[in-house]
Length: 371
Image (cartoon, rainbow, N blue to C red):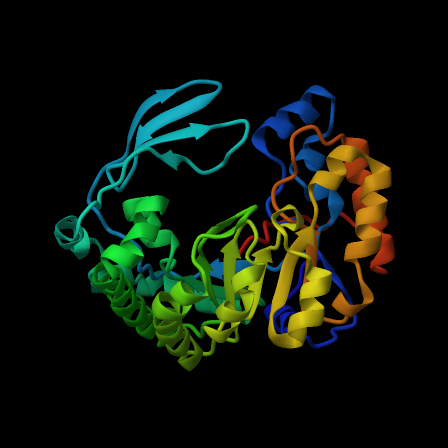
């Protein structure tokens, strides 16, 4: 079912809209698509359109605060298994197609504060960052029910893209002034973009990508969140709220639960995909945080690999009464894994819809809900 922006915002802010929301965040991994196609699965099922997932049409507003490097990406090698390239940051990258959708950087442009000063201009504000003509078109989309979103560089993810994970974590202790300067620079640009965008189109959601955790926990702890994230997030969030934003959403894989309270203190009120294998239990986290944060995802994708019995057990636990009535957008906690049989996936869809009291499938379509 296609939702409109007003109903989606109300649901995310814990208002009971009379209907639960059941979505597919990302869709199948590339290799699973090949598995299903080989098994004769229809293209409408492979493309997710057959399952009538709940979704909200979105307009990513035409203003960007990410890096403008002037570096032209170069494809070095592409085969069935891997892609090697030089990306727009000048990094050599590798993408393993069967298990990943994001290329892994093999090197990084920043190793020292001097390196940061050399590329700092990538994040300078320019009026060219805002497409006013496109924003006028997007204003009409919003009036027709589209959710308007604007992103900004992650407080962990963007320095990680520039430095690498280990180097960033070390720099928080050895070069904290450089990390503060990075985040101040990102914020200067993001706020300037938001002000110009918001003058044309009201903003519904502020979105940030972090992916700052693994199975063993987050790579930033409470101290780093308070020192680095809080002033950065707060400044950008206050700017977005001034232009109408009601939702502040973060995408972060892995076990984010040890710092979830600290992120809420930074203004966050939505988060996905809440992977159970990473230690996130949305049932228990709802008990702890109440209506402070909306969860999107949270259903263990690995249950589908194990078969219908495991799916039933997983849904009976995750579709908990304390998660109903707003504040939860139920869905798998990331891409549908390789090895999931189409019969099991159909069972998951049908049982989940039944347990959530949703009407029969009508084939209205599908859109990714990972934002």
